[in-house]
Image (cartoon, rainbow, N blue to C red; front, side, top):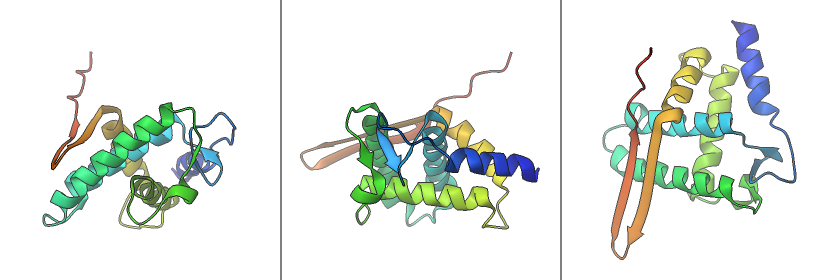
Length: 152
């Protein structure tokens, strides 16, 4: 069990550094596995981890950050989170989510099983649908899960 956790942590922390990367944190590239995990983490926090009075504010913020991350990773420009994350902007939300995932996988929270959390976040992240649009004074957002595919 500890070896599995160590492997996951090493995998997450040893993202390759490359000039072709679109989204970097501490000069390490976000890969599909990390992006999926972050999406799942944000969904989990939005629907299972927030106090009811804070959820109406954070759910659209998380949707917006996921939309931003999806756009950035398809871009040709290189984005360095530690340089562009500022006081709650989309990059800051992704950076904070990344830091929290790393802490959980490292075992910093004794009440959270890293294996269980990672499994849930990856499962959610594969199914997350996020939308965020602002038109004049109206904001449209969506943060939900696609239905699970039935197992054969």
